[in-house]
Amino acid sequence: MNETIKRPRGTKDILPQEQNYWRYIENIVEKKFLSFDFGKITTPSFEHISLFNRGVGETSDIVQKEMFLVKKSDITESDNEENYVLRPEGTAGIVRAYLEKGMQVWPQPVKLYYFEPMFRYCRPQKGRYREFWQFGFEIIGSQSTQTDILSIMLIWQIFNDLGLSEKDIIIDINTIGCKNCRNKINKSLAQYFQKYQKNLCPTCQSRFLKNPLRILDCKETKCQKIISSAPQIIDSVCKNCKLDFKQVLEGLDELNIPYDLNPKLVRGLDYYTKTTFEVRDLKDKTRQSSLGGGGRYDDLVEQFGGNNTPAIGFAAGIERIVNILIEKQTKISTCQKSEIYVIQIGDKAEKKALKLIYDLSNKGFNVNCTMGKTSLKSQLKSANKSGAKLALILGQREIFDKSIIVRDMQDSSQESIPFSKVEELIYRKLRS
Ligand code: AMP
Image (cartoon, rainbow, N blue to C red; front, side, top):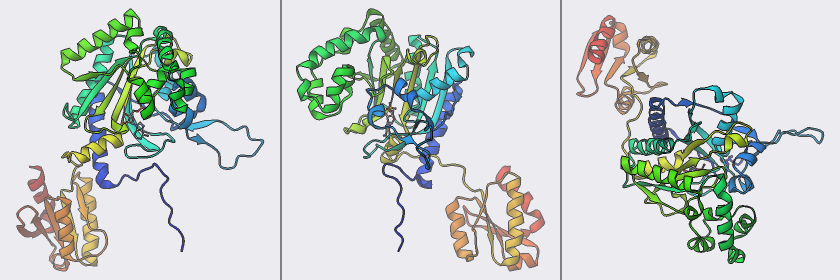
């Protein structure tokens, strides 16, 4: 017997029942961004590897160990192989598009959002996949702290609209300073971690040499213990960064948006500067409690060859949000249900029913029917399940005397009417 083929590790099949949650999230996200005049962007699923090496940073986990290389299946020695990788995150590709498509000359800031799959070759576990979806946004070309506040406000409102409030989530926030602060921060952290260098995990030992700030992001228990007494980043940031951070926090206070100051929050990507934040699931005490994260990345556009262009962005994981909504048994409105269910018994009725279904759906009614031949009882059962308000029944008798039965699915009353009058009755019952 042939062995069945299984889906790749760390991936998910999303079946119709769960798709209702996905559609619900996408609708809320889309509504919010469009109302704030964001444009949607879709970038390629794969990009040149150098984009992420340069953008996300060589000391990040994503670049060091989680990239999916894309290869042609029949590579020969002589092929000049392109090094492409599946996109592990959205920001680098969007900043590339910003420069490549000349968005610098658009009115600034450019506000873009996306809803796309990302790929990371991580160790799969609950809430951690190798292919996962994110919704996110980028605001490129604004350095005002008001943009930071509005960004966090948008995020907070989207999560609230999804049905998640301060009982479920909190915003962790921190500043990691501008590029001029980085040396001082790293120096003070290096000085501290030096004493514990040998006790750090192998990844952090290499981080110690290249970018000590990254150590703060380590989730290993032995590193966590050491990290807990590390110097606070805020003590090493410059006066302007401190002032900006104060303004952001005051703005959030003004709006009554709850947050937790988390002086160790650095996020997993190297491009961040200044304000960084994360939306955390309050009930989840595992490593996967982060529902979304973001922050400023004021140097990335310049790093990719553009002018000095401050920016801020955020991304949230859809699978993790869906999990919470399911756990919370959040009631969501599903898509539009069938309005009319056409029931047919016999070959002649089948033909007439097809034409009726075609005509009624052309007129904008949501029409449904059973595919294939089944009993009246089973078709009525399906009609009930579909949520249709009316069932139209065509049997041999109705074909013979050119009539049709119209059944009200709510009170089970039914009447037989001439077939020629059916549309008129439907309009009266469903559209008046
Ligand atoms: P990041 O792009 O790493 O800042 O992550 C932003 C959000 O994406 C996280 O808060 C998660 O909700 C989600 N996320 C990141 N990595 C994964 C993954 N491997 N599987 C599922 N969701 C993820």
